[in-house]
Image (tube, rainbow, N blue to C red; front, top):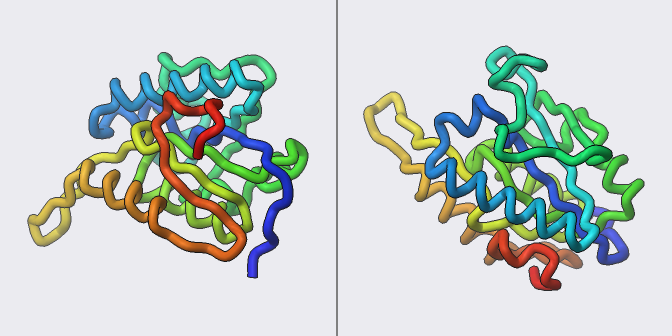
Length: 187
């Protein structure tokens, strides 16, 4: 069983809002604007913001595609976590950073819904954190399968929003909420 985190400190985790990821993502301009609103609300309410950047052979550290999208400007002093796997927890310093902040509740935004957002959400819950998925601040791209079928990005987004509403973990809370509600004491 997971260690249940005591306390109620929120942290906004922005995962892979990178140029190369968002370029192909569904409704990216709106999602980026919603992430930006969540970040501004978090800062206004003294909720720490942690930026996660994926690095691999397609997103090479330091390249233009690896950079956070220009519309989102991390503030001086905000934490960065570099990851190499879908989950923001795997082989990173995220858990230590959350412990240092006294975080017990993760507000989650970013990309890609069906990969890194899903993996990070489940990993957070498995590790005993409460989790709120920002329902209008995560995105992905439509997936084309080898058999010619497609899975629409919007369907994957709706599926994860629904899952985060109905999952049940002992001693933990999970929910969804709009990015504009960050800091309003809901979620």
